[in-house]
Length: 144
Image 1 (spheres, rainbow, N blue to C red):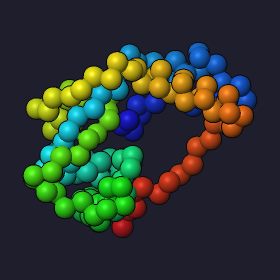
Image 2 (image 1 turned 180 degrees about the vertical axis):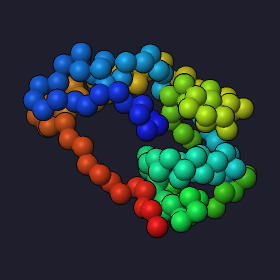
Image 3 (image 1 turned 30 degrees about the horizontal axis):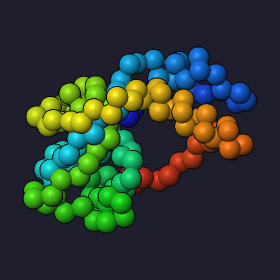
Image 4 (image 1 turned 120 degrees about the horizontal axis):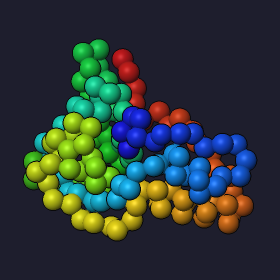
């Protein structure tokens, strides 16, 4: 998700499907693309400019707005052109939305799952398990 991609907060107490529609009013599908090292670098360049968190990764934004110390899954990112990284993302972003044009040349695999459905299913699973819906700051982005 990009900054601003979620359009509302979730209320304290019971959460309705209507709340989930307010949070995610778009019909965006979750898709998976395989990004080569240079495209992953472009993603982090974009993310650093927006100070946007990337799931499964951490990095530091330098004084001049560049990403450094990028770690994916706890491992240092080396930008290897011969390796690809799977990225789960909305079809909107995968097709260049929000100026993520670096993804446009890549093909993606459909999951046939709407992001809203994934969110609602996760909330249902937590509720069924008797667990609260919580949020926390994970510290994925550090700014120098």
